[in-house]
Image (spheres, rainbow, N blue to C red):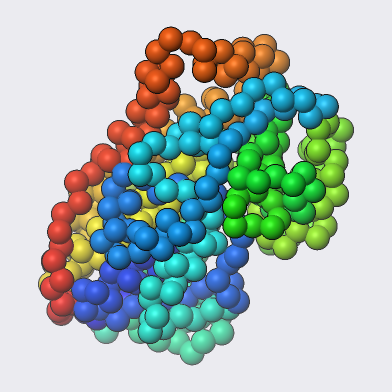
Length: 403
């Protein structure tokens, strides 16, 4: 067993390709986008995931691309500051936690897999088990047969749909949506995040130390929305309708929608599955156990999952059934711990009433003057720290692949 097809070239896919090649396998990565996806939002790497990045020899490079965010400011409809806090406390970070833009991390991982075959601008069309392996047809490339297929293709995984069935069986909508896109930095923000909360919605804008532009972010509570995921123009129109009439900088941010090169809108959802493999097909990252952006742990789960899956395949000596079972035993408690963060985090990200917003802003203003403020901060970050370290990484060695 040496040839493994990975669908998805964001985080989990290239990370898995890195470890598979180190263990002696021959990975191929197929990605629907015509090139690496730029943009995206700020993501955190914590706990066990930092250890994985360190074992890859990429920790210094990741830190070189750190966002270096300094402060989060909360403002009212007129732009007047009503509270502020450090960016690390706002993001639930402590100690060595790293924050990086998703596009930067994808590029670092891609560069670390130089020599791996990538099929950009293509996607899996069908899969069929044969005595020789999994026969795969592509939308563009000629058909090929692989020993294994891995779905690392996110919340709306094509591989999961083909191997496991309809998305509705596994994707749990948490009652919120998120939209992020690039806008001109007309406020001149420098490593600063601005947030404007209103009941049921939260609007923001931030700029890191590395970007000339800024990112606009919209969070909102909503039942499942009907829209075509391929119709970006329709999604932009929907967002403009939902946030029309809001104050602060929202009209200007919405006006930048038309020219946004990297518009993203999706539900805040979790993927819950009883098992992550079916025959010679296995899932990793968001495709298998996406915890949602509200958890802040999707990237960490992807990095750790890639490391564990590759290691279990190497140790199993070609027995994919044993490898997949070991991968699930090792990862399941870690996944469960991190998915639990999402719903509690959402309660503080999008508040339901004006009274809740006023109380939250009051507490943020008072916190620097309260005795025991360090304990209060640790109480906020402790659940994240505990979940981020809820796995002990084994050393899978560097045994070559067999089978």
